[in-house]
Length: 115
Image (cartoon, rainbow, N blue to C red; front, side, top):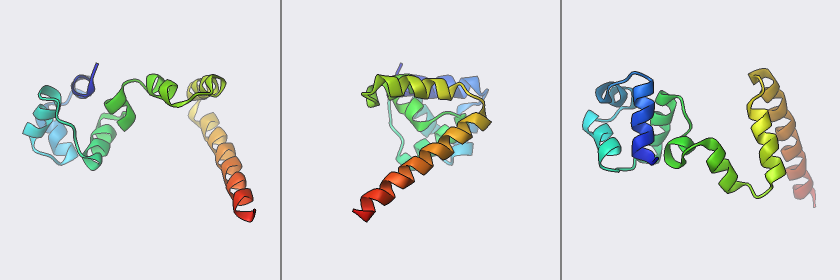
C-alpha cells in the first residue's frame, strides 16, 4: 500500500470527506484528491498537518507501518524488539522509558563534549 492508499484509508477511517480533511489541513480540497488519486506528495509542513489531523505519524503515511519502517532503520534486532515491547506499554510507563533514554543520551553527549 502506498502513500495515496494510506491517506485515503486513514481519511475514511476518521469519517472525513476530502473537503473536511483539506479544511483541517489548510489546503484546497482538490489537493487531497491529487494526493489520493494522482500520487502527488505533500510538502513536509502539509504532511505533518495531515498526520496530525489523521492521528498517525508522518512516517506511517509515507512509509507504511511503523514496524516496517523501524525494522528497515534499526540494524540491532534486539533493540527493535525492545522498542516493540515498549510501544505496547501504557503511556505512563512509556513516559518513564523516554525519561531514562533522554537522560542516557544527555549524559553521553556531555561526556563527548568534555573530551
